[in-house]
Length: 253
Ligand SMILES: C[S@@+](CC[C@H](N)C(=O)[O-])C[C@H]1O[C@@H](n2cnc3c(N)ncnc32)[C@H](O)[C@@H]1O
Image 1 (tube, rainbow, N blue to C red):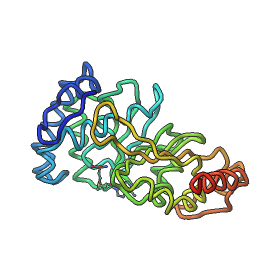
Image 2 (image 1 turned 60 degrees about the vertical axis):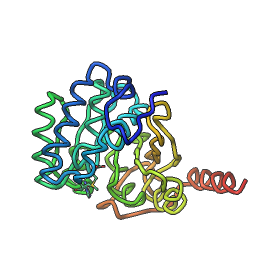
Image 3 (image 1 turned 45 degrees about the horizontal axis):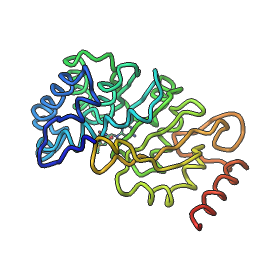
Image 4 (image 1 turned 90 degrees about the vertical axis):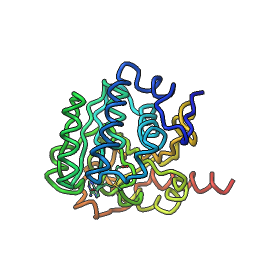
């Protein structure tokens, strides 16, 4: 195991294992975060002291959950988290960073160019029609620290292809959020909700991720998928009801 202690914020063996031949680029990304990332207000000044443990490694382990060659949208990317560590760890992925704030978008574009990544950066909010039209059909949507699970599902699920997955990094609150928001997430067309730990070999504590699959049927259980601004919700399908019943029975056991 290659756990990295927060007190020693150096890349360490976990970074070599996760970034492989792109470790030097990950080191450069950490330098940029520590330098202009802090001075431009993309991350807090204290974060500069724990970049590897709290940010780069913690995000890169998400790669475990992403299939080869996937098209990934990082919703609310901020300083490129988790999208940039994921793109660095997995050159096979097509990653798009989505962020509404102009200042952050400029920093992201400069950073992606400096690192020589093919990652694209788009300015916009996930619920905007033009964003949906352009970016729908993703295999995976990632998000960290963007919104409560229900709202995130309303924003993120319409960007996915049927069967695609939302990976919401949630920390210790993951299971609670699933219990609290499950019904709403299902109304938005989310199914097969589960909490997955990843990076157990590399980070301590492991990264907690809520995985939600976009139902093959629409939010109302019919074949078509029409969601208005991430807010409309239809009936829950029969198969979802069955699944919800199984989940509740499972929790009682
Ligand atoms: C707390 S920051 C987290 C940034 C980054 N994901 C991280 O973990 O460091 C939340 C980010 O989500 C973005 N955001 C908020 N609402 C959004 C929306 N509707 N669509 C896309 N991004 C959004 C904000 O501009 C901000 O950069």
